[in-house]
Length: 305
Image 1: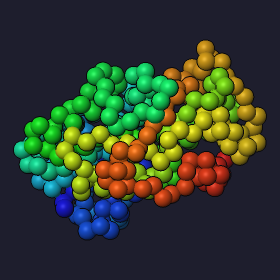
Image 2: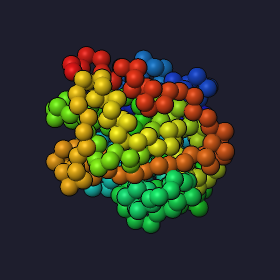
Image 3: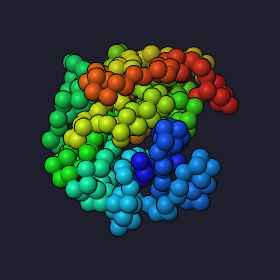
Image 4: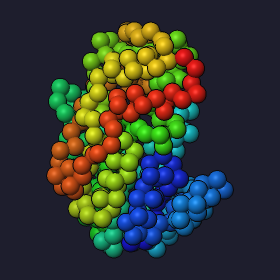
């Protein structure tokens, strides 16, 4: 299969591209910089120069491919606090990719997050793939992708947990939490810290994208979740131990001040099941869970305590 991948040189893309190549696919990755292009070429993939604002280019690349995996997102805008622009531009990019695939029966695998379930008020139980949302951040993108199934696209949408971890992760929420702890001099959690965050190893996530590309039925919602819910306090405790810092509770009213951009997330309870995804695609995570991966120490290499 000739596969077009956005975000191909990023965190998950850097694991997915070799996975696809090893399984006989040809890969062309979207690259907006010389550095990204060089990384793709070194991995054995083709390069298409452009970015998420090049909507005509995205449509053309999708039409020329046998399948598309959309991993890219305007993380810089999100980190700068302009999440609305990042979300809006993601919808525009998906609209262009969908237009290039419409009526072809070819696959499009796109990316969202499980935290949208918590924001939608799904609490007291595990979120599942059958939870369908009607409004909220990134929900428009998800429903657009699912709706492409009625327009001749074998579309699927992977909800990733807030923490995707591995040595390939260089800028995710784990690094942010560690940086916050270093700056504050304390590894913190909100309230009693019993709220749970799901997680998945990068290599397991990459395998799921490959399986979705190859065989997910049209209109599938998928959960890329290995750890269904790690108590946030336990994450803070590992960070505190490795940085030799105290671990303490932060009042919910002070979460925004302490956690900054993560203030609205840190106290969320987001237990999430992937049972239906595993059954549908035969996906079985095999890599370290979050706490074991943190204990390996690579997140703290070169970081003074």
